[in-house]
Image (cartoon, rainbow, N blue to C red; front, side):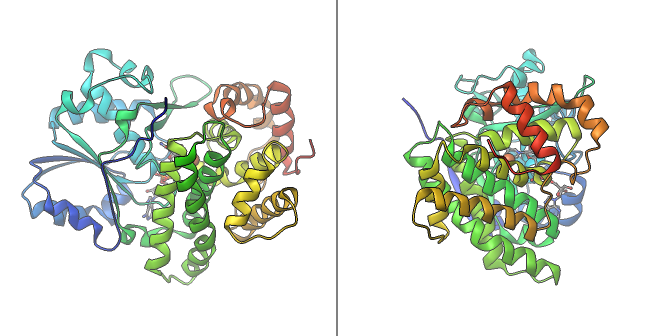
Length: 398
Ligand SMILES: NC(=O)c1ccc[n+]([C@@H]2O[C@H](COP(=O)([O-])OP(=O)(O)OC[C@H]3O[C@@H](n4cnc5c(N)ncnc54)[C@H](O)[C@@H]3O)[C@@H](O)[C@H]2O)c1
Ligand SMILES: [Fe+2]
């Protein structure tokens, strides 16, 4: 038996934020970060003031959020007792809100309320708190607005660990996709977060947990993202914002999250999570690169599936193998076009730092769920080689 878990509603397109003023919330708790507070919070306040909702704002979220900040937010959340939690921001903000909610619901469990989550267990979040979760993403990438996972960093020990926790009940009730929020995205974030969505689409499509439902979302998300990302990136250089293109990217990121959230991620994310935590590299900066490595590593395991993806974006070839090679090259060229790095060296990791952390990084990657659901098995020796190649940006030949 399997299930496909979704939010109750996805509100999308121009003026989607107006949905908030059609609700009857009494108290809302907004989780956000300092920049989003400055740039976009007023748009939500306008809508919520129209229904006289009492608003509490927690704006202390930083990139790649920690268990510690989530714990702090959960305390304030419990005091505010809102009937709606609203996450306004990128994956870091949405993951934080998803982390705070179970701690509020089960204070007696302390941090185990999040660290001990069973993906399929019943935790009765809505019944215990009387609240719902509304996600309003401001980056077009993570898909965290519709997934049941929260990725949090534990910095309490020497080597930081980034771990995924989750439960089906963490899938938001409502996701609001208003492209206006993405007009302030700088180019490098359009590129990096877009590659995160591409990597979810590819990973979810190749994962051993894939299914007919996730396939449908992932193939279309991949096509939408691939066809529009360079346009948005190039326009952003001149400050131009084409909302039709931005809407496609925003929708694609959520569809990609919907798909991989009901399938899994693969090697690309196991690599991305492990180097992200150990070398403090933002997810959006490294995930496109590690996705490229994942495609190279998996090319012989799944040539027909990779060829499906290539065909979806109009690539032509005489065989699945030829299409697979074309997609691998196409992805490398996309990374170059979007000024994304091709190696750990280019990401600024010194050899000294690499040598001191690599054993911990490999252990981390081996335990990541992306290793478990990767179509081609990956063991310790494989990781040693993959990381050696990734460090200098050498293409895989094994
Ligand atoms: N839960 C999941 O399913 C899932 C999936 C993928 C990634 N993640 C996690 O999400 C986090 C990354 O999220 P992210 O890539 O969205 O970045 P982010 O949330 O960390 O934001 C990055 C930066 O972009 C800024 N920003 C956000 N929206 C903006 C906008 N509209 N205009 C200008 N600046 C904006 C933020 O203020 C921040 O400084 C990582 O921790 C990653 O592990 C989670
Ligand atoms: Fe991701």
